[in-house]
Length: 159
Image 1: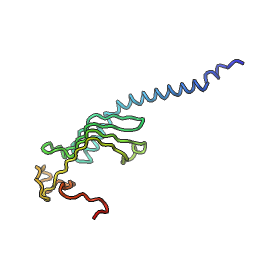
Image 2: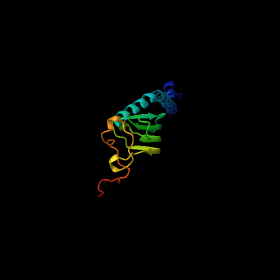
Image 3: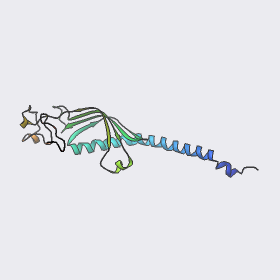
Image 4: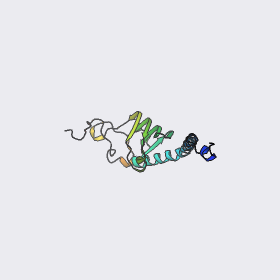
């Protein structure tokens, strides 16, 4: 018996090849779309961090990948109120944010891998450390929310 033209078109091998080509086209389209999407994501990250940290945030290149879903960022610098007369509060060479689909709609990220982090915590003036030049808005007291470099760090449950 001769195979009909419909059975040849719907053979499992041809369906598998078509599915593979469709997946490849989708992956290439997602990669191209992510490159156009990255500048907007970068700006949103800088804006959100600047607002929540009340600081000037500088961020280098970012890369989005969809398989696995993650964001890689280079050269993150956080300067309190944009001050350049003191070292930046935070400098990170690179970081990778591992995401899942629920993280995209929430405000909590489960895993972040950081490489090359420098954290500068100025001492509070009342602890006896050297006084840092302060902006006019902080001249009345210490910088709010800064942990003293001389006080021990305590974890919940420690005396």
